[in-house]
View 1 (cartoon, helix red, strand yellow):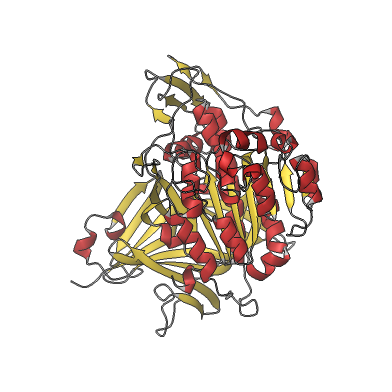
View 2 (cartoon, one colour; view 1 turned 90 degrees about the horizontal axis):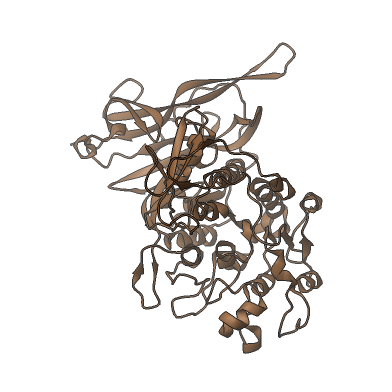
Length: 576
């Protein structure tokens, strides 16, 4: 892996049970069919990922659970359903979070579930069953892992031992259990954590007061006894004709921090810590209850938690763009049941009024009413931003994520854009610089100073050619709710496909042929062999919201938004 694929910081954001169907349902309801999710839809590089697990005999299990899938990306190894970072023989495996600690990085683990649940657990513990939350269940169900039998202990006990700098989730009930063996026998896990230096929080208000996290004083925030409350009240699908509804806010949701708030706080604490400043950080974030509400056939519940996921992704992207040395990977652990259907089907049905004012029918048909809807085995979306992001393009397996993230951390050599060399950013429109003949910023990997601007390009293999991602150091204006704000950092400029395939090899691909097309609900336009594209080349533009900034007579900035065609990618043809 080249230095361009190495990242100082790595943030992995997981939407549990968030297949393409769950994303589309949320987009339609929250933004409209042609709308744009500011986190999930803003990632520049996208691929597909297989998720199958294996049985203890080594055969494929096509519909995995969250323990096996989490183990796959956390350790790079396939395992059986229920396994928490152990192989199919029960032997412990090293997680990404532990790899990060070995490189001197600060580490964090955030979830809206119980901290002992599968996805957060795979980073902090190795046990033979995902049910082994505390000492009592570990003695009964994971006896080989129990402290009294010489094991490493329950998931909660291993969390304390692993000692991430920041842990924010639910699951405080288990910390009322007492250790059954070891130096802390007879004491509750909460008392043990406090005596071992953890800043132990259970109240939302306490999170704002935390100003630092370190190995000497790590943060352990558990804001509910079990899973954290979700954003929207339930709307449970039923057999037959569905009643049209709109989603309403769950009043209990205000009692806990949002996933965005926990993500923002974690990034703040990790990036400002001594270890974070010196060596960077690793952070895993999970929106857990997309899955839980899909199991319950609760369309509003899953929409609200997908919105939480989107907000967390946007926070991660905003930081990464400003930082310039952060890899953000966004994906799910497995696919799930919910489907957008034309009209009510033979299973369970719900009907909601979307942002467009139209009705959307969502069906659940893998379990009867009152049962638990099932995971499905289809491949899922994986997307990324930052150094090494192109490694997720194409079709990868879940285990590949371990190597994408671990290689980014272990190959980072401390280089980053020099603050003194970074040009002063301006929100005023500037023409795209033309590189001199000595360097083409779009096709040459590395960081380049051209025409008074700083450019950063990474190139990776893509299908039968090479694709280069170019970012530019600049200030852009983005909408934050009803307000506008200026964000300075590395921002996407374009993708360039190098001249390694002929025009004939590109065939009917719409980015290699003049015309307009629609992809994932968005409008595109391609022009070929024009003055702007040059001969033997095509440029594609996307119709998107553009924010214009102007100073008024008083010197204050004013902003306006309009739909415009924006340059997105170019294809350079190999001469036949």
